[in-house]
Image (tube, rainbow over all chains, first blue to last red; front, top):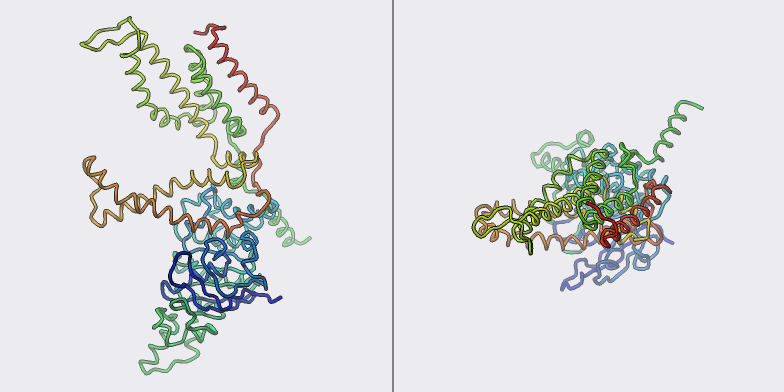
Length: 273
Length: 276
């Protein structure tokens, strides 16, 4: 059995759609690794998330060609509740991810572990761990319906972490966060990958986040992989801007320095890091 | 044992205990009652207020509700509920006082209007019934968190889907209101006039309904996926974090109150006991 989340030659068309949203996409997410996914709007990033998490086509229908496997098992052969424990998915819109039935943030994060029927002490332990991991334990008593966008996103992330999946699929987890929140989430994800061995597929528009934590980066355009490889190489690729992706600040600064005819030193790059 | 180890163990023990804000330790005795007991009290209040003839039934319920509301510390918060009955109470007063069938004991005659003593008495009695019932429901709503009720219903076999549907429907009300406000602001920013007379306001509703309804429907698919991703369809029973304390005396009291109130109504309707 091969450990990892493997998408192999996957093409996907939504039910009722004329065109395929993903075309012949392949990637391999090993445990403990972080793969960043970038691309312009409508390039297929969110569809890739649904496919990798096994929700497409199992829950939303549509037609899948190719293969998506988790630790060697086709996702189509695993029931949704089984997938939930193997592959955590964070949606772009945190508001729709929350259950709407919990009176406190604590109970909201506990919703997933409770669904799995875990013993109460384990649920409590997981909830505190997840809340601490994303730095929001102080809002545990608050009403989830009254959180700011950024707090809601962190609570949604904690809710996914509380399921302790082996793979995390995160669709723009920092889109509503301020710079401090973005940094916290990036550091948390890097730590989770390092300490728990979880593989992370991270869709991001903020390339600085990917530059900070991704081992590899895949760039999608019109549903196909157009660039892929080690994060540093892909994020420095001059074609990135043509694909609708803004390079990280460090890369832009290096280019500006070089274009001005100045010398770009490794020491300067390290200082910026 | 070193200090560090002791602290780590204390922290471990602390993190396996349900926090107080989830346990919701009641600060007043009435709040400590089981949700089903409180629901039974509200139901018995309705049965007695509407079922027992004369003034006694509604008056007893009214006094009991005021006392229990005071004991629970929610009496002041029941005021909006009482005020909400005003339209109904006003129509009861007008219809009964002026149009009570076959009543001849006129209070006064003003042109075509002839209010009667019989009608006014019936109107006041009906008003007391409505207010007593309204307050009874208010005390129940204000002292029973909806998720406590859902926990209990789930424990009694409603199932996770049933409990979720009820809880989610109630929880989505503020979200829909918020969405409606966002859409209103967005349409206003584009020049839509939502102020002014009734016809103009009604016309302003049309461009709101589409985005609110279709937006809510569009969220359903994402919510469904989110539930699947959180293990909602897992087999077996969900873990219930809180155990709502119940007791044998409370269970007995519930049955006694329910049976007693039904008997009281039966006796009252049969005319076996004359109550004022």
